[in-house]
Length: 493
Image 1 (spheres, rainbow, N blue to C red):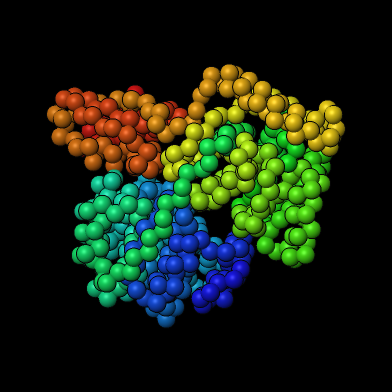
Image 2 (cartoon, rainbow, N blue to C red):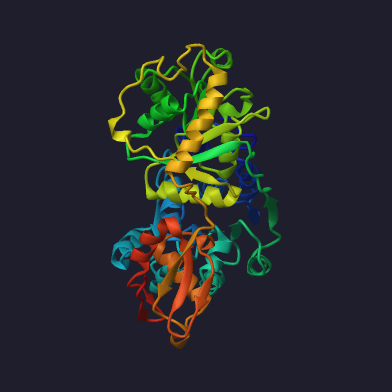
């Protein structure tokens, strides 16, 4: 991976191991500024790669001569899920550095489990504001030597009612420290923090990517764990796909998937940054001529692909950034022709990731159901072609249209849309003294979903209704039911 600024060799090596071929725009623009010691405001949408943007400088700034008992980098995040995720990414960056420790601290986990870890000492702490406050008050989080504080998804933390905690934390850290803030939006509350707690911050703003082209029909495919390969083979056969691209997040997955597809009888070739240019050119020449059915590629390697007759795109891995999703599915539906994209989803975390993408690109994404997934048999290479054996683009278009109409009828024209809400009823209201911010913070905090996914909140005298995503309603109700709001155990239904 080529980087046009200097970073520690150990971190670069770790990034290579993580499958990075290049940095995203937010990473390219903010990392050098943070490494220079400047306060930074990064304005970019969710999924743009912000964790690496602050993670690389966080690891770089650690002074090993300072006792581990003192935290040198503090990262504030809105939810437990994000704390665990960010801590995991930072640990990967620390793969080749020694004597640096990081820990995630958050509500929902007993303090008794976290206190011993904190007392052992850790230079990088990632935590939710409330739990960070708990450790400050217990003096198990020592911030006297703090060099950098990061506010990740700052607007989301404010939406969840953490402003007071954030300001208390900012007042309790040394004046001579670096403050880095990332946010998708810049409401007044964020600007107040910028004005009061940052020193001449450098603004880096990444433009929102445009929504995807209208000629592409987009599908989400829920499949049991371990059946993604079978799902791709099934769709290839059923939809008569002659030419497609499968996107993976890492080079390693590309190398693993190609032979598995070949074993299933589908001709496939891989494309990623570790290949020699001569080999990449050879693969692309074969793909353009229709000599292979599927090109399996990483995002960066596929940026130069401009082939007009790609029938479908498969997101084998959920794209790590919204802009990658837009770019991926744009490889089909070119030159005014129709195209299809299929995103494979195996668990609730991936479903949440897909929900964020839907909201960001304002896309209409249809469910694609494969009832017989468990009974799929290996395909022969000629089974995914048309009966006339000629590659049959004419018949393919007609067949795709018929199959599409049939699918929509079978699925009742269901759509995965963020605009579909379920009215959840909570057994607290005005008489309990609750506010919309408290309700939002409680629902988002207990269910671990982004506050931005929650719709209208109406507080009545004795109960409150909250709009939540319909496709997640059972999980949210289960987690919120029994939670405490203003000291009262709440019934959710």
